[in-house]
Image (tube, rainbow, N blue to C red; front, side, top):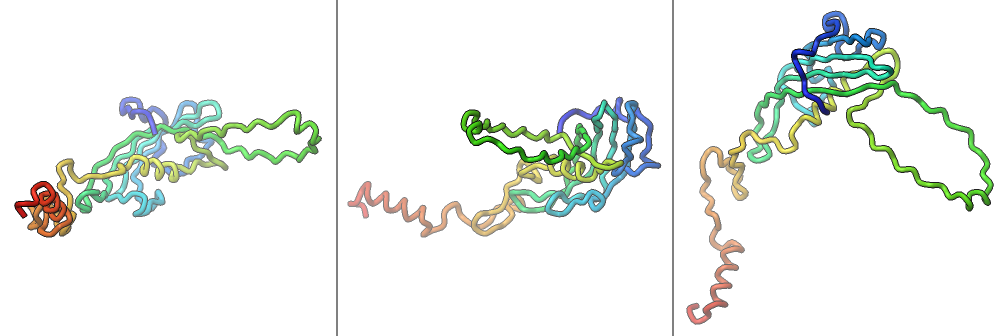
Length: 216
């Protein structure tokens, strides 16, 4: 995902958010002048599961679609509220999110299988085949078939990519006590830094004896 959303330029095309399905626009309606789509979409409409991204309420989606040669360029912004789980204290918290979208769609072309050719073994030895390096996929490129774009899978993927890998309810979150599990944000627990008889305390006592055995 790349590109910054510019509110002053978005929406320059014909606004079809009311009359056109935001998630499945017709290819024939997308011209060089561009069209604009907007609407409030639920997680269910986008195919989101709790394992993907949990959201609170609908997401506000605004998209610009423009045909450039055989490519359809899609830019826009998504805004809403996500439900995260803090990696330190494990509590759920609401987080406002807003991110831009800058992707492209191309028609998927199915390559017909070529007929197998008989290869002379002698020629195979003379001209060894070179292994072609696989092309790296473009994360911002999607493909479509038929007469409509299917935008829901793209939006779902962009939502997942925009989610933090290690969400924190606060940068100052103290997390849970590793011994008793108490949430330290609610106050200190009764666990000492080192419990009597812990492996660390035993090791410290053994080192002290080795340094000065006469005192023990």
